[in-house]
Length: 501
Image (cartoon, rainbow, N blue to C red; front, top):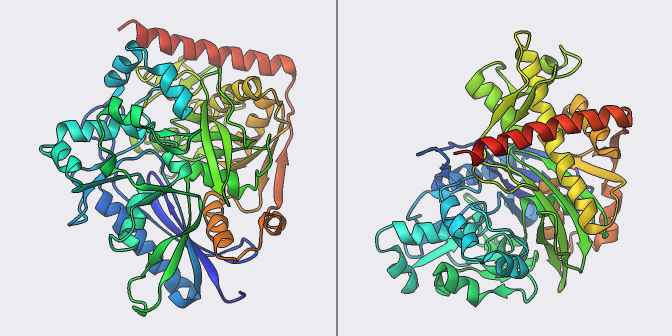
């Protein structure tokens, strides 16, 4: 196996990446291409699905060229993806009938309000583990079928296919031969019953979605089909053998394989997941119950808290306020001041996620004085990521009844030592950063490798996880209480402003 590798496709919200991973869990080569974010109306976010495929396939070619690897040396392909983002395409031509509606998109918020008013919330949460929100795929798919001419009629004739981004990639990799998703992605659609492990007929009827449009649901670690990479020997087929939504993949990549283990990913959004084992724990604190993965017929569940805007608040400082030129500059700017000087940013650019779930709240800044400057804004922006994470962790502790003693972290923002220390201070627990923070891609690779025998079993993966640095809380209880109280005051004021409309 020494000259064979796993190809991990990490299709994210702002970029497509491909990583080549060896048996020790080391990254041999990596390539990344950003793609365009489209905002046709306030609150709407779209992607060109064809551009997603072209950037993803481009990074595959680039990563193999950089590593001087032949396609024959790829043991399997794993896929992880931005979740909930919704694509509908023509089965015959393979072309999307509408731009992909991104998980951040809020166009269906009023439709969600109607569903809540009709009393559908408890039924949907009981079946899917999800709260009614525009975040999930069901209302996005419903919107496309309602608003694109002839879409519903064509769907009912079996001419159209729906998928989250994993399905779209597999369709393209197999040249239209395979239309599948895995249980982790299916559990994010608000159409899948996480207990019976089937598309739910009552939900399909509620959203008026024909079952013929849906992908087949499979486990997270098995061979789904064969990929033929551009430029390789036509007889060389590479098994596509692992699929998981990005946050579930990160949980697996962090090797949080036992109940009670938790991780937080700091990406465009912030996502904390706790493995709850084979038990689906109902949340009483506005968290989501979701499928973590299914391997060898065994389904693991997780509690999840989703924060919509995390790293994206730094992109906002860069692209809209233009107070930094590169995201990497934010730590140095924020470190120019000892704290945020009483400034709080509530980055509810796409509404508030867990534990508030209010799609109507918008971003706000509180506590500005004549002395507030760029450094205070940078510090407040970083602080907002840690505050939102603290809200989620406290809810998770209450639901699971298991105090989280340590939090494994990954994602781009974890290189920011000041943020990680502030996070440990707020959580009053250890924050542990592994040597390899590309845990989303690792998780997809591990799932694929297990399916084809590249790794023997879960225990053979444990030695791949190594701690790089541990951040322990340093602040006093009084300091922590005061800081969190200020944050909650800002959040409550933001909600009050939204409710006053």
